[in-house]
Amino acid sequence: MARPKAFITRTLLPDAVDIVRQVADVEIWPDESPPPPDELRRRAADADGILTTIMDRVDADLMDAAPNLRAISQLAVGLDNVDVAEATRRGIPVGNTPGVLSKSTADLAFALLLGAARRTSESERWLRGGNWRLAFHPTHWLGQDVHEATLGIVGLGQIGLEVARRARGFDMRILYHSRTRKTDAESEYGVEYADFPALLSQADFIMLCVPLTSQTHHLISTAELAMMKPTAILINVSRGPVVDPQALYQSLHANRIAAAALDVTSPEPIPSDDPLLTLDNLTITPHIGSAALPTRLNTMKLAARNLAAALTGQRMETCANPEVYNGG
Ligand code: DGY
Image (tube, rainbow, N blue to C red; front, side):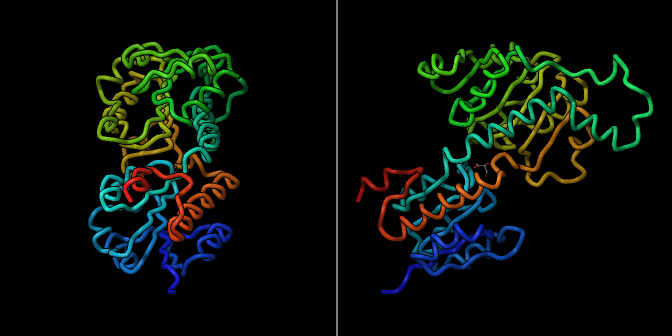
C-alpha cells in the first residue's frame, strides 16, 4: 500500500520530522517565510495530512484543494487560523498543542509584566543610546512594584493558570475573568472572580490570555482602556487582534494608561513604521511566548505525533474536534 503523504509548512527540528517520516512521505516548505496561500494549496493538493503553523490559513478553499486530506495538525495551541468547524464537517481531525507550552508562555508573560513594570526595555534603549551621563539619581527611572500589586487575568485557561501560579510567588492579589467561573481554581490558585469592568478598573496589571474568537476580537478597545487605572499596565500574550491597536496607541500616547507589553500584534509581523513602535511606554517582543528550545521541541513532537497518529488511523493525542471520532 502507498505510504501517505504529509506536507509540513515550515522547517521543524529533525527529531519532530522523523516522527512523521516513520509513517509518511514528507515534503517540507523550505523557505523562511510561510508558503503563500496558492503555494499552500498546490503543495497540499495530494497530501493526506498537513502540519501547519499560525501563519497558514486553513480554510474551506484549502480543504477543497486537498481532496485526500484526513489530518490537520497545528503547531500551536491557538487555532484562529484554522476553520475547525469546516474540518469537522468533513470529518477531518484537527490537532493542536495545548499544555506543553503553557509554562513557557506564562514565563514570557511574566517577563513582560516585570519588564514593563520596571521599564527594563525603555531604560536599556536609553542607556544604549548613550544617555547615561549622570550618576544614580533618586528620582530617575521610577517604575512600579509588582509584589503585592493586583493582577487581572483575562482568560483562565492553562496559560492563565500558570500566570496565576507565578503571581502567587510575588504575593499579588489575583483577579480573573473568564466565560465560566472556575471555583476549583479559585481555591487551588487563590484567584478571585471579577466581572470584566471590575477587573479592568481594579487591576494594576491586566494580562490577556484568551483565545482569539469573534467574541474576543478587540476585547480591549477605547472604552475598556478608559476603565483602567492611569497606572495600569496591559500585557497581551494571546493574539494581536484581541487588542484594538489604534485605541491602544492613543491611550499609551496620551499616558491614559502607564504602559503596555505585547508579545503579539495585529498584524504580524508589525510594520516597522507602525506608530506603536514610536512609544517609549511599549515593550514588544515578536510572538516568542512559547519559543524556549525544550518547549518548542516538545511542541513540535506533539504536533508530529498528532499527524502521525491520524495518518495511521489512530486518535490524535490532543484533538480540537474530537467529535470527528464519534461520528464514524
Ligand atoms: C500558540 O501556541 O498558539 C502560540 O501563540 C504559538 O503559536
